[in-house]
Every structure is written in structure tokens, then in C-alpha cells.
Amino acid sequence: MKRTSIFFIFFCFSLIKSQDLVEFSMGTGYQYDIYYSFEEGITAFPERINWELAFSTDSSNNNIRINSGNGVTLFQVAESIEDWDQVTSMSSNSIQLRNSNLDWDIGAFVSNPNNDPLNNGWGTLTSSSPTIDGFNFEGSRIYIINYGTFSSPISKKIKINNLINGIFDFTIANLDGSNEETISIDTQSYLDKTFIYYSLLNNEIIDREPSNWDILFTKYEEDLDNNPTNPFYYLVTGALTKGNSVAEYNGFLDFNPMFDELNFSTEINTVGYDWKTYSGGYTIVSDRAYFIQSQDQQSLYKIIFQSFDGQQTGNMSFLVEDLNFNPIHLTDHDSVNFSIYPNPSKDSFKINFSDDDAFLKITDLNGRLIYQQMGPFNNTEINHLNNGHYIVTVITNDDIFVKQFIVNK
Image 1 (tube, rainbow, N blue to C red):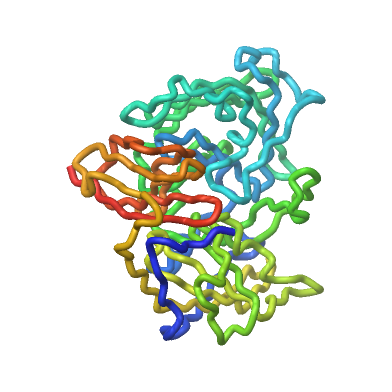
Image 2 (image 1 turned 90 degrees about the vertical axis):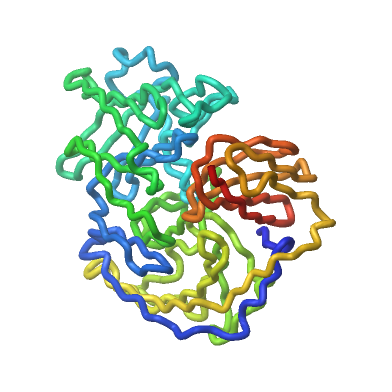
């Protein structure tokens, strides 16, 4: 695991504020998703099963996820979108595709890119350079999507035709070609969200995600064996973070370890589901806590689960502490050449970093991914960002480096 070790020194565990008990219910049968924000508490509790597709609102991202927690499944059935009329059933060489349980940016529709560097799952980049509104994609594959209920299952074929200027265009039809319909999803009206959702059953957009959240309590698909070559997928109920840095800690809970002793990860299932065990009833794993950084990495929280009643009631609770976490910026950067200029910027700016073997990402203060690139990126120029504060994170094999910059046009 990587840990932040340069540009910030952390003095964070000398004193703590009081603990708060957070109690809520996901409802009977886990009827609701619960969105929780460290700043605001519970910010939304939408129906969990009222959608099938989730479209990324990031204009540079063609990501589409499926509601696997409601039994939605997706199969790639043709490599060419021109075979639309010939697809009438599931073939023996169909490939089942799943959402990543580690990264929000890898939904089922983009989880199987081919060797073409411009191919991103369902579609291919029309140009390696973005327009002012982001990247554009043209569809290249056909899928069969299964959804509905156990008593009334539905199977349809679906193709994503294109993504142009933040508008997804897709076609869906019965397997025999009847009831064909083309639908457009304009994500640009929902830029304060990570995803905008769509109900195939009701043919409507579902605006269900709050603007501010850190943890989503939901039902999702997990590989219980954690073995990509021979996975064992199962539906679990647990906590997925918005990409916050999270460390699991096992030990005496009245003691807080030093920050550099914790192994932080941005994998969204780091909290996950296994803080509880089942043997005729649920028991919370003893002596386990999670340390979670805020989206802007300026605050640190500690949560300890207290109860989980299962699907009969959906009731659960945890303790949360806002720790005294004080990042202090260092002025001695001689060991690494990492610069952003001009900062603040009125339009374009450049990023320099001395190590070619690194990964760069830019996020806003809500944790939305704005830009990402593998190194090298000396004199990398970034354009067309809206006014606001942004976080630049550079990840190497050993360290994570963080800087903030401002766009003020």
C-alpha cells in the first residue's frame, strides 16, 4: 500500500473530539441506499432498486455501471455494432461483464477494453484529444442486459451508440428486434453528481445521488475469494467510499496508531462488508476501526461499527470521531521536482514531476475525477477547467504527493 510521506507532515492523534453515534436503517430487505457525509451526516436515502444503469457525469469518462445489487447482469454478445439485427439470443461465447468493486470508474460496460489503445469498452475514442466538453466516443459492441424481478425477468439487447459532449445515446430492444427505442441521457445537467441513473423499467432518469457524500451503504457484488483468476461472486451489504483514502486498523480501539503506521488505500471497498460476521445473527468484528480521510485530504475520521441487524430491519450504527488532523505544508521540496504553474491560473497551466514512473490525477474538492494520466508528464498542459479549487495527486510506487491549485478566470 502507498502512504503520503512527502509534502505533508501529519500531527494527528494527540487529542480527539467527542464520538458521535450514527444510527440509521437501510429498511427491510435493504430497501434504501444510505449516503453519508462526514460534514453533513446522512445526505440521501433513495430507493436501492429503482434503476438499472448509471452514467458517469465526467465529460472525459465514458463509464456506465449496472445495478448488480439488484440482480442486473450484462453480457457482451458481439464485437461489431453493425451486427445489431443479427443478435437475437445469448450465444455460447458471450462474455459476462461486471462492475469493478475497487474503482467507481470501471463499470460493467467499460470493464473489457480490447488491445486498441483508443477502445474503452463499449466504444472507441473518436480522437485522442478532448473537445472543450470532454472526449467523444463511438459505439463498437452489442450487449444483452438482464433485469426485472425473479418472477418477471427481462432480457433485452442494448448498444451504446455514442457519447458526444456529455450526452450518452443508446438503443435498446427486445431480442427479436421489437420495441426498439433510442434514448439520450444528458449528463451535463448533473455535474455536481458522480453518476446520473436511469430506470429501464420506467423509462426515466433517476436523480438519486446527493452532491456531498463520503460513504455509501448499499448492496453490491463482491469477489469473496479475492481471486481474479477464479472469483466467487456474491451479493453483500456493506460500505463503499467515494474514493477517499481509507485504512483498516485492527487493535486496541482506545489507542490511535501513528499516521505513517496505517496502510491507506483509495479502493472503494476498503471498508466493504467484512466488518461483520454471521452465525445465526450478525456480530461486529471486535477491535477493528477504519481511518478515513476527507475528499480534500484535510480532515481525518475514525469509525467503529456498533451494530448490524440484517435484512429483517436493515438497522445499523457506527461511532465516528473527527480526529485532530493537521496537515502542515513543507517548504523544502528539494528531494522531488513537483511543480504546478501558474498557480492560480486563468486558463491553462502546466505540471512538472521528475519521476516518469508515476500516475497523475486531478480531482475537485468533492473528489470528482477531472483528469488522469500515466507518466511521464513533464510540462503536461491542462486546459478548460472551470473556476474552483483542485487537488493534484501524483502516485509513485512508494509515495503519494499532493498539491492544490486554483483556476480563477
